[in-house]
Length: 308
Ligand SMILES: [Zn+2]
Image 1 (cartoon, rainbow, N blue to C red):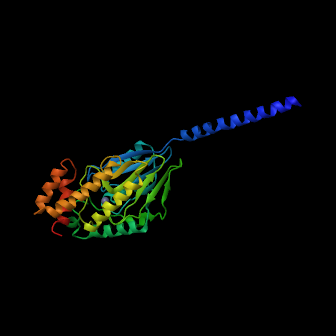
Image 2 (image 1 turned 90 degrees about the horizontal axis):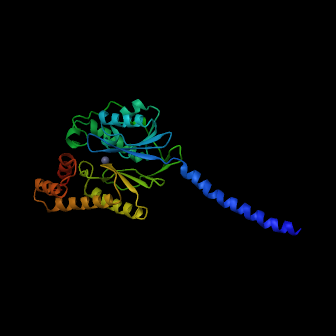
Image 3 (image 1 turned 90 degrees about the vertical axis):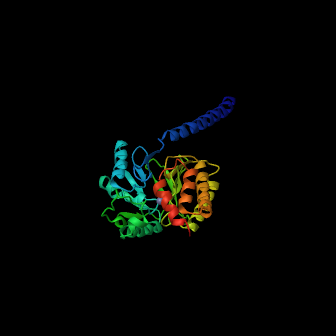
C-alpha cells in the first residue's frame, strides 16, 4: 500500500514532464515548416517593382509591369523558382501594374487574376478607356512610353474581384489585404501585410529613390490624403517595424514612409514658392539628385500642379 502511495506522485511527475517536454517539440516542428519567401523584381522600364511571394509549392504575384519585355522577366523568375502563381493580385489600376498581365497569363493560364475590391476593377476599366483615347500619349506620357503598346486583351474579363481581405499560400502563409485608403497616387490601392514575415507591401503609397507620380489623376487633395494615409500607416506599424516593399524601388524599412511624407511636403512647398515650372523642377532635382524618373515622373508632376 505504502509502495503505491509513493508510485502515484512519481507517475504523475513523469507524465507532467513528458507533457511539458512535448510542447517545445511540437512548436519546433511548427517552426520547421518552411517560411514563405519574397522575391523583388525591378522593371527595366519605369523603375517599377513587382513581387513574387512563394512557399514550397506555389506563389502569389503582386503586379505585372507595363510591357511584354518586363513581364517576361517575371515569367522567367517564376520558372527559375519552379513556381506557378496561384493568384496574381493587381494592387491598383495603373498601367505599370497591369499591361504585362497578358504575357504572364500566356505562360500561366491557370492563375487567378484578382483585385481586392470592385473599386479597383472599376479604376482599371477607366484607365483602359483613357489609354485608348487618342490623347493618351499626351495625358499619360510617363505611364506608357513609346516602347509600351497596349495589348489587345480583355483585362476586365480576365480580372475577378476577390471581395476578401485574405490570400494564402499552401503552407498557410496569409496575405492580409487592405484597400480602404483615400484617393492618393491612385483612386484606390491595396496594401498587403504578411505577419509571418513581418513584411508590408505598400504598393505605390511609397516610392523608394524614385520620383513620386503626382501627374495625371493626382490633384492637391490626393497629395494631402496621401500624407495622411502614410502617417496612419506609420502609427499602425510603428511597434512591429516591418520590412517595407514599395511599388517603385528596392525593399526598405519604415524610414521609407517618412521619406515619402517629406517628399510630398517638399513638393507642395516647392510648387507654392517657385516662380516658374522650370524653377520648381530645378529645386526638386537639387533636393533629390539621385532619384530615378526625373524626366518623366517629376516633369509631369510639376506640369500637373504648377499654376493650379
Ligand atoms: Zn501607381
